[in-house]
Length: 358
Image 1 (cartoon, rainbow, N blue to C red):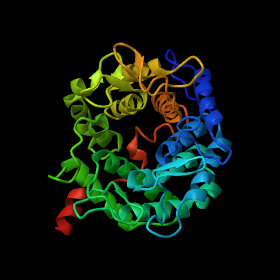
Image 2 (cartoon, one colour):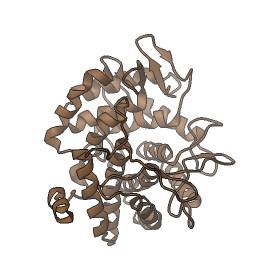
Image 3 (spheres, rainbow, N blue to C red):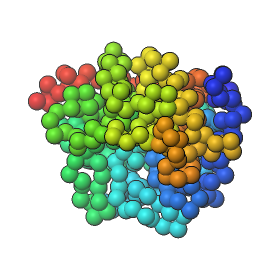
Image 4 (cartoon, one colour):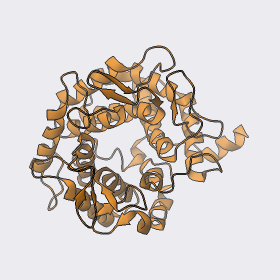
């Protein structure tokens, strides 16, 4: 299997070193914390598992998915879901985040693309099925998915554009898994149509206002919800607001804190939009946060090059760099998952579905 590398930018050996830092910090039970002694959220845990898989660490990746199987709730208000944050010896934050829970579908489909291991896909199907059913119970009549549910079952009162966009991509992966295994889910396809329509049109009050956050800017592109013809103009409209040229993406627009994960995700969004030059420039900015030992700083305040949080290296940042390198290079069998949505099930004609519903 070809390993990710970006010729002239980063070698396969360097990316393997970065992958080994994720594996080193993985716990014996499969959980991947942000850093030793830190917490784990299932979304970033899955991100790390995907990075491990595309660098050849398949056993470690499958151990990460086993941890998800063992920690998924089987009953109660959280049935089908996972808590927001876990520690090595318990739970840190008990809420059930819909976006976090849906991401299992993206991870499982990625692993299938990497391995074509049908046994793995069949073993994970029940988990994916339950997770998506949990998430869709939080869908509003206008399409968005509410952010989360409290441990007592009470849903949060608002949806997030970033979270709903990520769920849009995860839903397509879930539908793809179902189709591969012969489990058609037409209700999921309808839910996807309504969700994508809401992301494209953003009806008043549909999403909580988060205009400062870069993810609300580029995630509708990264998720595949927007029409491809609209993606570049969408990104360019707020490029100056969020990108520090030569460095990367501000996590929030009013602070010069450039984060590697957001920068890598935005690089993939530019790939979707057909601007490979910008994607490479952003990726090179993210690599400023990669250290000689392969670990990756969460972020830098630029142009002063001050790490914040101070000297914090995280597994999810390492994973973001690996996955972006794979997407840019087209190295692994799963390299197109985030940048070529034509390989996923189509989003059905949202306009006609919405009109029928009205």
